[in-house]
Length: 144
Image 1 (spheres, helix red, strand yellow):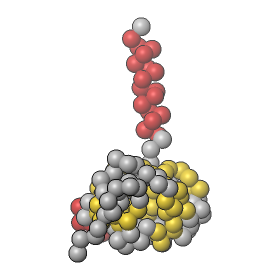
Image 2 (tube, rainbow, N blue to C red):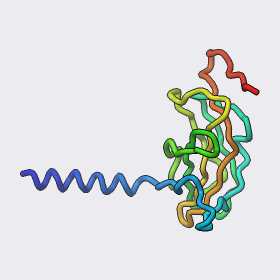
Image 3 (cartoon, rainbow, N blue to C red):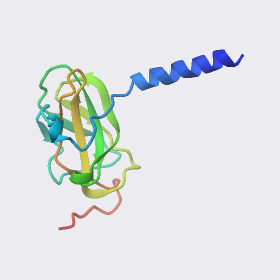
């Protein structure tokens, strides 16, 4: 009786692992020749505040035209870590609609997005940007 249950659980776990695009290890190791080489990005821009809970369009130059994944990153550039996938295995059209979760911590900077070509592993980062408060909350003021 136990072996069919274990088999089903193992199969489900294996299928789930295939559904997630593994992020490129961060930080990039220049000694191994891994440098950002993927699509040029245009949005979000440096110091832009992306609203939580509202649709936002991520934009980049679609090159090469295949499928792409977008990963949300967090922390200062020298210690950036992946949080979760925004989208995976979507056509590389140059745009992706994203609704940042209301659970994200408001911050004037320290967020980023990694754009990754699913086929080649080529990737690029956005500039660091902020995530704002929910509509109706006091506005987020950038500290300088």
